[in-house]
Length: 256
Image (tube, rainbow, N blue to C red; front, side, top):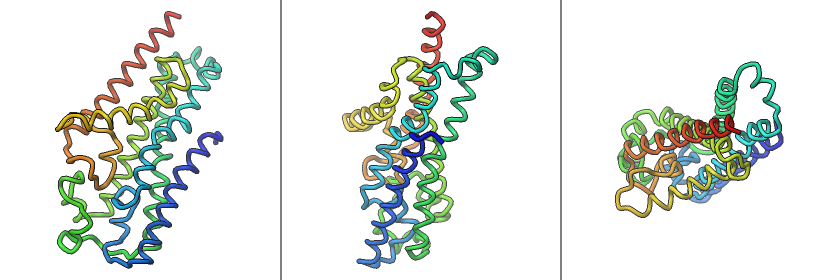
């Protein structure tokens, strides 16, 4: 394991564990029955700032811990032998695929540690639509409120998986940006800066057409009215930009 990947993993895991400690302290003081693993897991804890910190630095952790390894290897010509034997596109696709799996695990594992830890410190009480009304899970604040109350365990795991998928997308975005721009620093901070830009743009119109991932990756969000279309459009935007960066970057590389 590269040092930068280990450091990124430690940072995300530390945030997850600090949130776990915060949830334990809150339950010890107040002892509220609505404080359960299904309401206090990292992505669903609306009263904690740790989920914002985790999702905000997630693109930076992925690009530094995973994407930058490919960027360095490419710049130092460590992939040169593979390019000669298998071709640029074939090698790039395989490396992007493998690194995206690593990026997903980098995001998912700390969230799973946090979720499992919640069961060790909080009562395992299933959420119920009427008695748990104060927790703030409504159709406007989450993707599927009916699925949350019907199968909360599966629902939270699906959100963790969704966060992992976006970790992979951020990795692809950073790698393709590095191929296009040929600047390591820009590629590392690119996904983070782009998410900040999306946050700014989302707050300008009354009804935004795209939304930053940090908003809809929260199990319950107060920052937007949850709709599927803006989420799909955001996904298409990231994929389209990644494809554009890669195609243009390869053409520039071939011309050079």
